[in-house]
Length: 165
Image 1 (tube, helix red, strand yellow):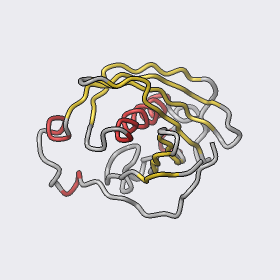
Image 2: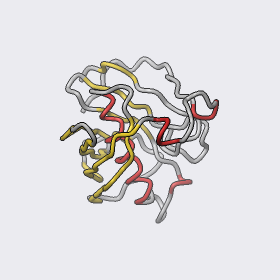
Image 3: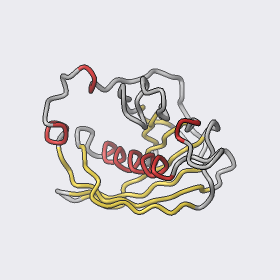
Image 4: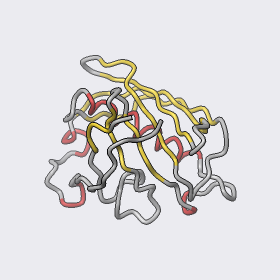
């Protein structure tokens, strides 16, 4: 499926932070069908049981992907998670390429909600979730503006033009 736009990364985020040594360093893409896809690998620093990623980190990836889905409709909107429900279908390994696919399912003036799933290279669903968010500006979420160096978002250039789903 065709990539429409690559989304930004941050420096320190556990999910999208490019400078976080324990992070997933996920890249997020807006797709032609309106979904958002994250390409990533969890690493051994995010382990629960041997060769398994911690459920809290799996939940964080689903949360981040759904939270970014609002940008497909409102590029400057942010949100804070009100509720999240995750179903763990199969163990999620680390050190292997994974995808998280998310989409909006409802959007109102004050809230939005969506769903996401993590799949492996064989398209097996490993985990899936649904979440509801309260819409807030970046400034209200962080209590400061977007000028702080550690918070600046940036695009990591790559040549990803299509993603097989």
